[in-house]
Image (cartoon, rainbow, N blue to C red; front, side, top):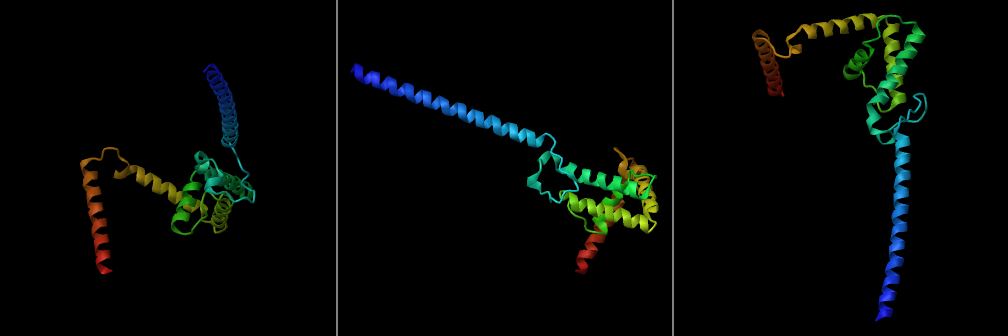
Length: 182
């Protein structure tokens, strides 16, 4: 009977030692993978002029918006340097964004190289056609009008409320008529 207890105690001790070694190895592996992930996520700036096409899975998800902004900033700096443009560059992103939405399909902002090339092409073509300043002035005027309109008020006055309702009714009626024609 004592022999059985001795064997049981020995086997239990060996199993306990083996399990604790595995736990330490797993903890060490987890620490190294966490450290590697932190190193990747700390600010992995990939050069925008690299030929590598960035995909959503290739980047840190919290940096996905910054890729497009960095590409835009590089394109803007190159444009200002190339054309010695000394006027207002604050609304460049608004103008380029509007052109990409309405007139020309631009590359995804996650594809930094193609997006930078598209921004450069748009800004260069606007300056070559001598319309960049007028487009920026028009965008400034739009912003001022919007800020002074009823849409920008946090609590619209009675007149603004009526005006907004009237505009909404007109849009709805126009849409209904368009659908009836189809």
